[in-house]
Image (cartoon, rainbow, N blue to C red; front, side, top):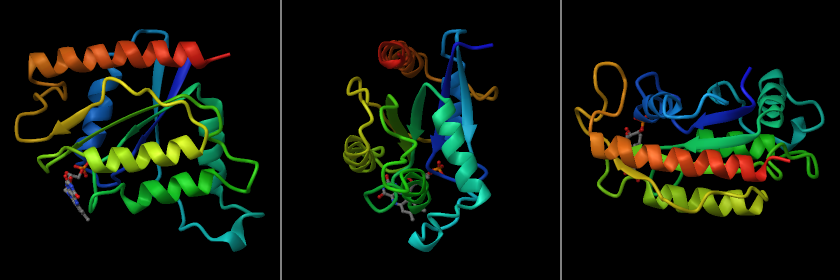
Length: 184
Ligand code: FNR
């Protein structure tokens, strides 16, 4: 069994998501003592204060999966210069009720890929603001802004370009060190 479990939250819920593909390719670059668990946010209901004391099963599942992990990796596209609503909703749901947030203290990493030329820059900055408020120590460098185009992934779902793969391997090394440093 892996020593460290990383909860992976992809901001896109579509079946052919580039960010989901990136999450899967990235997990292959991690050392063996790490396992990556993809969390589903597509079935999380819209946050409603009325339901806080009696959360639905998907919300309880999301919170327990986050709590069980040693760290969280957010991989998100950019929607209208911010994060997708599905991701913000999942973050809000798991942060409540007040004082019972599942996020507190969990070390995190952030990255994203989009078809736009600025490659999720604005979305990631918004996300970093939210994670700071949630008291999640978040890896600052290297930043990863990826511009997705045809051929980005090879037929096996790996990063096709050797230089991009090498860069992401360096990111993974930093990220896994970051998780170890923040795991008590
Ligand atoms: C987008 N897209 C987009 N891209 C970007 O770089 N900046 C942006 O602000 C936006 N805004 C935006 C809004 C909405 C509603 C959609 C649906 C899309 C394009 C987006 O990056 C592209 O669709 C990605 O492929 C989405 O990621 P997945 O689903 O492939 O992971």
